[in-house]
Length: 517
Image (tube, rainbow, N blue to C red; front, top):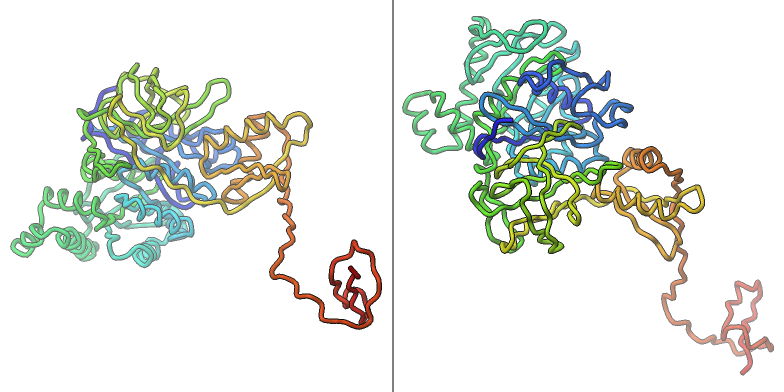
């Protein structure tokens, strides 16, 4: 594969509620770039991204998947993320290393619950964002409603770059108000034909173009002055202004796509290349010591592990981003957390489950390596003598707790090892051995998350497990010191084993029994 410098590597995370079309859009991108010669489908279980057996079985993404493609001189690393809240840990890990997020909105459903939840994390990471309204070919597509909801939820920073001319079952035309052209697609999508904007749409296109230009100019004083002077901004001005505004979270450009029909993906890829930031254009990383680490290929070698995949009979696959320097095969790095030295015996690019060996990865790039001895998610590895540690990913606390046990005797140790493997893969899973309850407690994100855990234990680790409600720890609490009994009459002799005073009501008598001493 061709080598790319830091400025020509773009890292994106595909985000959105379950069913919004992220995996299908990723498939379009690979197909358009020529990395695959046939587009797979989620329905048939043939996509590059959803390669796991469980994802094929359920028909939706459960794990984030790393892909890469090239487009007009740029390399684009794509992280396809799941849309269900139970798998939010996968989304957070992706946002930690992505330099741009592509938020898909389902034109038939508008802004959904999962969209809002994911958006909170994009705000936390200050990830530059673009929106893509998908499924515009569906008979129930409502572009106007979807855009209105996006503006209501995410503010006026959502600005249209495109709008559909004929949303619905016959959808094949998009008006682009940045380039002021109409894209018309054939029945199989792909590369569109550029046509003039129809006379009937010129007023709408002009109004949205002015809105876009004003949004860009309003975030840059020099561009604002130029706009007031000339009444327009040229292509280079718009590119520079949108680049700066997306990095600063001042603007969220909105595009139109039909991932199912492969319409619009090439335009988004071109925008990612030309406008969205590379890692070296993003703010420098803050280290735990308070210093800044610049994304520079000539700087000290430093990587951050954001995901681990455990594979039977193979070992652990560690996914990382190069935050500084150039990582080469055979290089030895120090794990800042453990102090252990790790040798990078292999450097890999991923296309779902497929792996491509490479000799080096530059700052800003994302890749993987195999069989690191003592390295886990959130670990920073760096060249010797540098003592660099990047801030870890903060994962959410659990929402559901169950007790787990093996239903077959003698497999307790095997279960313990399997749970340890699950924790390595998914940092939102916590395991607690309760001495008080005599149970092993499993903490996770919800019922769907629990189903996936059960499937892994049974199908990958070959265990037969059962989940139960945790036992309730009953404890006696002494809230205050008991006052001496004031009764002095009707005393009778009782055994010394009784307490000093027994409540009469509990005995069904008016007498108060106080032992004679």
